[in-house]
Length: 241
Ligand SMILES: Cc1cc2nc3c(=O)[nH]c(=O)nc-3n(C[C@H](O)[C@H](O)[C@H](O)COP(=O)(O)O)c2cc1C
Image (cartoon, rainbow, N blue to C red; front, side, top):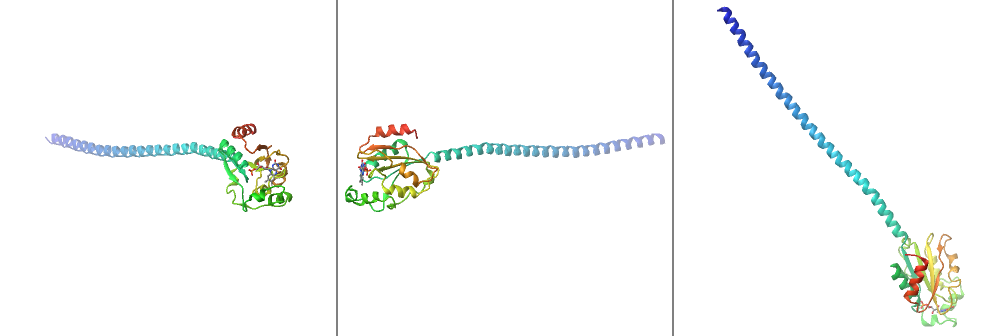
C-alpha cells in the first residue's frame, strides 16, 4: 500500500511536472512566435524601406534622366539664341524699310528701325544742295544721334543691316549705330537701296568701325521698289534661316 501510494505520488508529480513543462514550453513558443512576428514585421518594414529606397533611387535615376534633357533643352535654347537674327534699317523715304520688312517676314526675324533723334526733313534730304545730309556725308566723323536703342543686342548673332546710299556711302547714322554696340563675334550682312548706285565700298568702309571678330558677309543693293521675290531670292543665296 505504501509502495502503491509512493508510485501514485510519483505519477502525480510527473503529471504536474509535465503539465508545468508544457505550460512553460507553450509560453516559450508564444514568446518565440511573438519574436518571429516582430522580426517578420521588421523585415517587412525594412523591405518597405528598401522599396522606398528603391523608389528614391528610381526617382534619382529619373531625375538624372531628366537632367541631361534639361541640359539638352538649355543647349537648344542657346542654339536658338545663337541663330537669332535682327534686321536693322535706316530709311527716310521708305525704300529701305520696304526691303527690311520683306526680310523680316521671310526670316521671321526681329526688326529694329534706326530712328534719328532729329528727323531728316525733305530739305535735309535734298542732295547736292549742301543740305544736312550732304554735309554729314562730307564729314566722316559726324555721328547723328539715334533715338532709342536695341535692349537685347546680346541675343542676336546675325544682324542684317540696311541703309540708303548717300553719296556712295552709308549715312553717317549707320556709323553711330555700329559704334553703339559690341558686335564681337557676330555676323553682319549689309544691304542698301539707291537710285542707281551699287553697294560699292559703302559696306567695306564700315568694317573699321567694328571689332575684327565681326564676320561681314557680302551685301546686296536693291532698287527703290524691290519686289518680295527679289528679296527672297537673295535670302536664299546667303543661306540664312
Ligand atoms: C543725301 C542723299 C544722297 C544720295 N546719294 C545717292 C547716290 O550716291 N547714289 C544713288 O543711287 N542714290 C542716292 N540717293 C538716293 C537714295 O539712295 C535712294 O533714294 C534710296 O533708295 C532712299 O532710301 P530710303 O527711301 O530708304 O530713304 C541719295 C539720297 C540722298 C537723300
